[in-house]
Length: 375
Image (cartoon, rainbow, N blue to C red):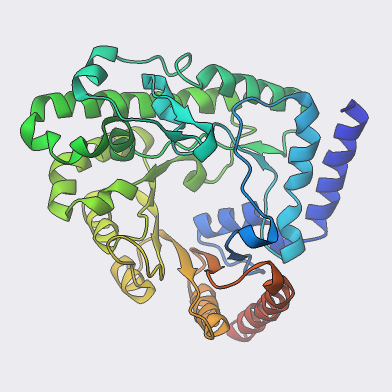
């Protein structure tokens, strides 16, 4: 891969993005964060990976060579073919298990780099505090950041690795024992959670410094994320007593927090009620979610006029796909602090022409609604 080929890929991406302002995810997300109306709905309309059509998800890799940069940059324009939003951004790490490697956890490349067997609490406590700059995958992440900074222009941003959240990390590291340790060994559980939270904050601060302010997304939702997936396996009372103290520490350190609720309604309400400085939360129809899903109307009622963004992610009901999205586009006209994404669980590769046509119709619908509301 020559420098000329890399330069060509960068130029082609810039041209593709300039031609599709309706798909500018970064601008739409920043406008929603700021509470400003946007000209385009900029929503994602997706489907499941179609295994029968030969599709599959390639495993991510922690290292990146110069030869791979051009292909990665070309791939950033891929969503435009489906009229879906995109942004010129490189990712870091290998997904949800990235930070567990700092504590010596082995990841399994064959199953999307998920953590291997959890460790015992005693083994975990014997590790001590890992260095957020040198432990686990952090050296590879530093190499990736340096390579991108060296070869790519500043307008191509770099995302933080998937930080998850303290309790999610504890669940991956300690397994299902994490649900009983607060009662069986409260002092040791608290020590473990403090160490995990310290690493979590240290990695966010360290990697942000490596990336640099000119390369980080300006949107706070991207800089300050906390995922609460495993909270869906405990009660709201358990969250308040055994998890909230560590989320509060993060909120105090950052000044704001974007929450991934993993659909759970009790997670939505518990975090919204007890965790200050939330700037983004979630709602949407996910029928197979472990503890149910947060109804969008309910979420909007709970938020009221608070300056909190709402990430609406919905699995579309068959035969009612367009009607559901139109209702949400009506919401967007009234509340610019909304981001939208949809998955047709029943759609496959053969449905893409229909999806593209639907997407264009819905884009036109939003612009008509926006124009009529401003008269």
